[in-house]
Image (cartoon, rainbow, N blue to C red; front, side):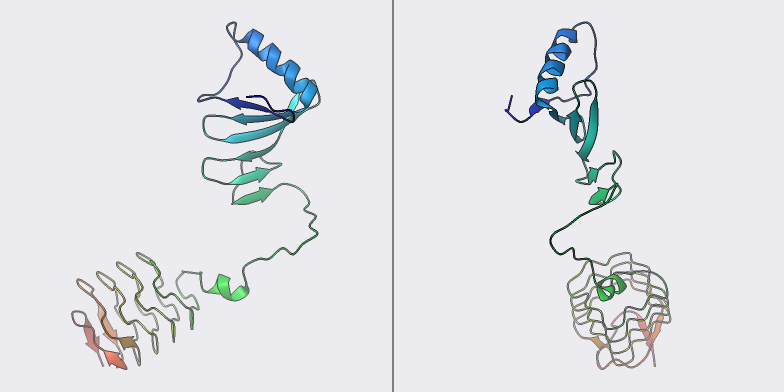
Length: 203
């Protein structure tokens, strides 16, 4: 398929030069030299190149993971630019609050964060501060919540199956309609509503 502004090459495998395709390569080089832009689909990536008529230079690629690299052949994020960026518009980034509420680490401060209806299976937030957090209908299956502070948190409808709740503080938390099959550990505190039907709750 040939466009006036670019060449589109569709291949299922990496393209290499040999006796059988030398003529094709010469033809493509001639076309590319006159047009100046190559758009190629390789085995795993979409690669964009420019040509000065002698050699071609990669300027951008989209990896099989959907990451875009400009000036780099190995993008490490959704958009990875190797060089300066000039914008006439507004470039926005996550707020400090958004970054704080997505820091699922031990001792993290997640107080007041909204995790409603999120899938947080297997997270390890031991000793984390989750006071007054919204955990409604949140999937916390196999989560490690040992010694976490969940006082005042809303866990109504949450899934705590197989979660480690040893030492977790549920003082004033809402535990209505939770599921906690196979959860373990001895939690502490007096919930405002509901109970831990299977796990031990020590007042």
